[in-house]
Length: 450
Image (cartoon, rainbow, N blue to C red; front, side, top):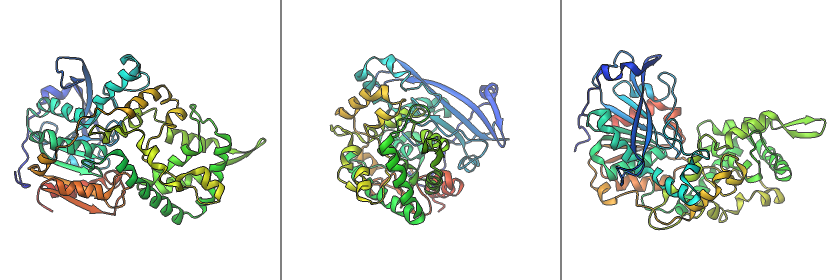
């Protein structure tokens, strides 16, 4: 199959969709709902609902257009809720009809959270249920709904971050469903354990923290002051989140985004306020931190974050927590005692978060069951990837804090015909920050125009 292959199209009739259509500037939207098997290996069993938002350029709603399905990063996040042609969507709508899919368990699809999971039974039953929410099931969902959406024609998949992991599995499991695959910041290690992922991650995080302190040297002392206050008081934030020193350090997750260093700086500079009782953390600081650290809106991120790497009969066993001990510079208490800089962390999930976050506390035993699980199906087929015929282009962000560049490039070399675009112009959120340019280049690459 050539990279110059002309995409096949499918007709979507106006009569089928007109009743559910609504508009934003320049865009016509349609809510789509589907039912799929909870377990695709048991197609006659329980079914769950998937929600997706169809988007097409205004004036082209009745045209025959190739389809692009978008898979959001995460795990555990629903698809972007755009207003009009924001970010990359406007570029996609120039020549595609777009399906913004809420992956199973997220957004408006059948939810999986502290409120709904107890319907499954105890912790072990809930954990078993959640094993069906990884990339393999998401791809089978896509293949289950594709005939209804496209009339059977293949589509292009755009996978951001974890969505790129799903796209890589798609190439392994069902390449016949794809006209092309576009991946942004999401080429996974094909065979690495979660330990390998985090052993590579902590040095990247350290570099990001050093870069932040070089940009904002006043934040070294500010972070130490806040860290010492938090370590002593462990304040309870709005909504019930218990702010520990480790939790405060985890705000470093922002440093992987294009504006994250600036956001962190602005947060730190207004942390304290003087009150009749003495110096306290300001309401504004507490509110922002509570919003940044809570997993109430995306609990699957915490529950499945390490499970997305699990395969090969090994438990993840809280990999990020274990591997962190190999990097003592991240020990906040020792840093404060020694007078050194406080290193932030990020893009990792730890057992203590299930104690701090009220949205996660009821799920602690479920998380433990998932961390100890060894029965994980393989996610990637190296032989099939080596024989790939689907045009693939991937943006590899050279300074990506979330996805290791060497892991990504090793995978790029393992997928026949994959064209990597390695750039340090963007952080992990390049598809958001530079969406039209990023998508335009990658579309040109899969079409052989660039």
